[in-house]
Length: 447
Image 1 (cartoon, rainbow, N blue to C red):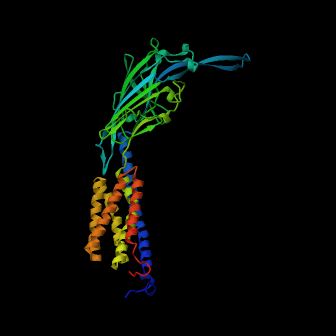
Image 2 (image 1 turned 90 degrees about the vertical axis):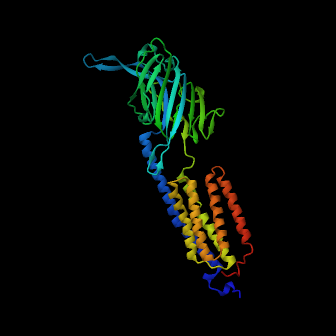
Image 3 (image 1 turned 180 degrees about the vertical axis):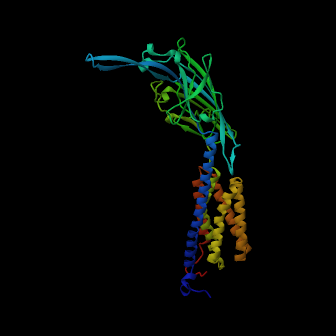
């Protein structure tokens, strides 16, 4: 005989069961949050390892230059009062200042090759080696724009200056060809906290005021390769075997020649003087131009910890939908499932994420996801078989969980369409639940 909902204790009613299952689902957010904290901790540890390795191997490779530096005499007058004659005396002092000129044309050709050989513990640190070849010309320096008298210019003491980061990881001999002469670069003390200075040997511009130059720089580096567009015409060409570049800076690469495929990428930039808001000539000091750096950042689109973090964010959804499936089976089949059994099922679903992150650190995310999915579904299949005593229901639950895990895996792999696919998928799931629960009489059905 069917018992009325009013004739049974409240704790045995459908409403009470729903409340208890809901509270249990909320309680399982606590271990799920610990799992997410574990993922964050492991990701932070990887960042620390990457920083340690790149500190010794090499960091960002940024180039500011080359710049022609020419000294000139500056005269200043000082007026003093002679105590003996009580008359003012004027004395003249001479000092040296510097004028800086950017090139008429500079062309950078860059090869970037990734290096997967570095490993620290569990972590493979992806770094690269780069070969930068530069050539170009300086036109006759225009001192009139700087209001400097050419009679005071020390033409025979010109040098070429290149500002660069990551100098400690340079692997080239730092030689420079100026016109027909071979010169050397030397590192200099510099107050600039961002760039290091390389200055060439002194050369003479007394006879020929124009300069052609070329040099090569090789670095071990990581993260990015960027340039400041110092030339009236600056061209940059970058080739690499890296599949995931991010082009950054105030200047975009040419859309006609840019290409990205599974073998790497190629990109070209062409920037003229009218594209950037700074002059070709500067007196006394060089301006800070860090904001005008452009080039490429070599990125990992989604690393293993980002994928694990994204997967864990769907943990509550997995728990809620799995509990809903069990609750509907319990409601429609009159099979009693104890709240403790719901707890065991929920903990198995949480354990999926600890399995996932631990296996991922020794394998790929896809393999780890497959192993963790099979392990958890297998455990729940045999557990539900023992408590439901029905192979049909156990197979249904296993297939439903497999579909949910597959759905979440697809969302994790997507980038641009993750929100769209996720929204459509949840809409379809809600429709399925509404369809199968449409005939349940919630008012009189006893569980």
